[in-house]
Length: 247
Image (cartoon, rainbow, N blue to C red; front, side, top):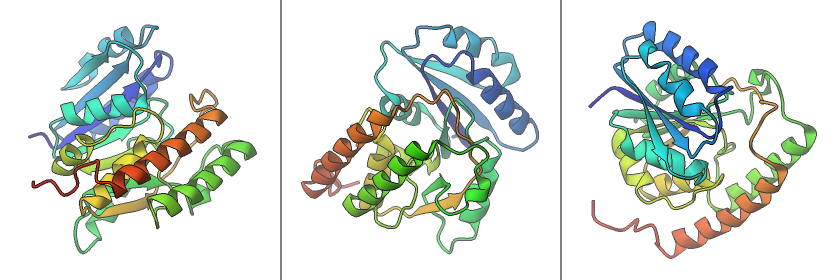
């Protein structure tokens, strides 16, 4: 089993993913990770796949896993997590809003815990000085309001469930993502809620983050996400995730 799997969901990311992959390649050259990088192409209609494949020479292990159609970020991340073999599995966004080097911050914080957490997530909830380029005031308002609802409904105590920078232990990734169903933007909420229900410790760690002007998340997505959150709450209460199933 490899030390680290890095999963990048990508839909029409030909213009942005090269810089992200270049940053990852530089990072991997300067440390001892035995790593695989998996780009999950979510039915792109541009040249994302060709751009990624042209960079395979920069990595020991870089491959593309392709979806036949655009199924949503949650579906892409789920496929990547369950395809990966690493004892740690990190997913991050193709726009490099949080750089791969922030992984060091997450793992250093995890090392300070009395019991190593199975899930460590990047957060910008309290350390606004780490935000390089903020979102618009409307997006910040929608995000804060949505997070209050998410905490009340399914994730009490987790201040920022939506950053695209999360690392799972391999066994936790297998158990969590094999139960996930949400294909849209609420997939983070679902994965964290299932992880907690399974008894895994989730640690939230401040990370550097910058908003990308070409964000694929439209304001209307916040309302669809909250609808998914209510379904996640129902499914947890009715054990549709088979939390009680023997391991």
